[in-house]
Image (tube, rainbow, N blue to C red; front, side):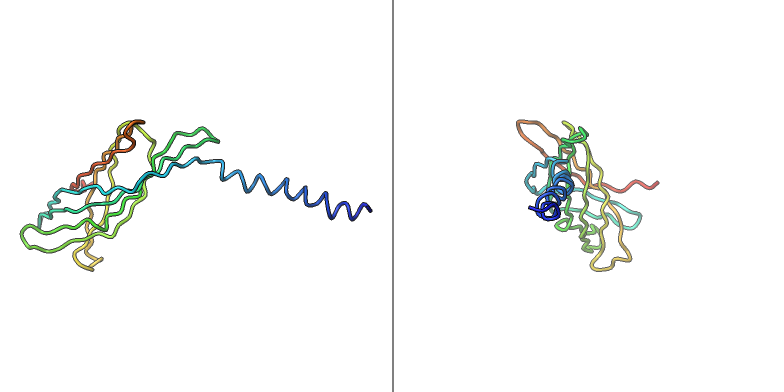
Length: 160
């Protein structure tokens, strides 16, 4: 076999594979991900403004994942994808209906107990120009035996 044929058929493909393969495999090895279940979390709380008190109810859905950094030895992270589309509010005095279509992604270090504050917008009907904000406080606890347990409550966003 001639040298130029040897280069084209054997050496060049081996070099390309040796260069490209680590670039393709490395991102796959960086994170070990354990997908948790999507759980409904009951919502109960009121938000009072100067004009109205709104009672929120329904359920938010939270998808959880545990992300372990096996390459850089970073902390194990908890990812929560919080969906507020099933949370509904109603004005106590006026009876007006309020909804939210917000989805929030939160990354936190995985701890035995953690409280996460998530601010979400809500609107009356389809009037996005009059959107207001409320806060959901999500309590996440983790143990190897029971896994991840979530609870939540709604409260008014503190003014800064």
